[in-house]
Structure formats: C-alpha cells, structure tokens
Length: 175
Image (cartoon, rainbow, N blue to C red):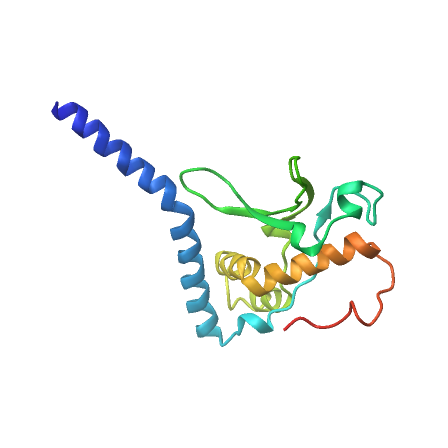
C-alpha cells in the first residue's frame, strides 16, 4: 500500500513539474530580463526589431483558400520549446486557423534570428553577454505588444505580400 501511495505522489509531483515548467520558465525570463534592463536603463517598448527574419513557408500573397480568406483573428502564434522537461524557447510558430481542418503553419521565427539592434550594440560594447541578450530578446518576443505587432505584420503579408508598397492606412504605428 505504501508503494502505491509513493508511486501516486511521485506521479503527481512529475505532472506538476511538467505542467508548470513553461510558466516558471517564462516568469524567470521576464524577471531576469527586467532586472538586466533596469540595470542598463533600457525600456522594453523602445527596443526596435525587424520582421525580415520571419521565414514564410508560402509565397505571399497566395491563392491558397485558407490564406485568401484569412482574417487577423485567424492568425495564431504558438511558442516552440526545446524539450518537455527543461524547456527553452526556440522560436514562434505562426499559424492560420482553418475551420474543420488542421491549422496551416504559415511562418516561423527562431529566437536566434530575432535580433534587436540596440542589444547588438550593447553586446559589441561588452555591456551584456550573449545570455543576457537572449533573455531580453525572448522577453521582447513574448511581450503582448510584440505578439500583436507580429500578427499585424503577418496579416499585412497575407494581404499584400512581402515587398509591395503599403498604403498609408496599413502603415500606421501600433502603440
């Protein structure tokens, strides 16, 4: 009986670790990034980045029905992690939600390709190391404003393509 209780407690313990590891990983990233940014007097909102490194798996705009009929609400972003137990964010997967079908994987952005020029300068000046750079860039990537901007950019790519000229209505700054 004791072995059964011990096995049950062990299973609950392992499940608890597996179910909370992503939350605590992201919380740790957020807290450490904030600490580093406070020391360097950096504001997360002022860190610029580019959408150029997003890898699209389809030529945009496309004649694929799921993409032609996609709305901004249909764009989903999913975090991509390294492993189940000791998770590390590898990047983000960008999907287009389809009714009655599997979601269509449209694009991917690796964390290593998500570069922040102001952090590149700080790293070159040896004010931060690569680990600090990674923590801040992950924090910037998972920030709700950044996620919204990525969704807006992907939707714009679906509508007009990568290198077409935008009209002024699509060129507004997201605050």
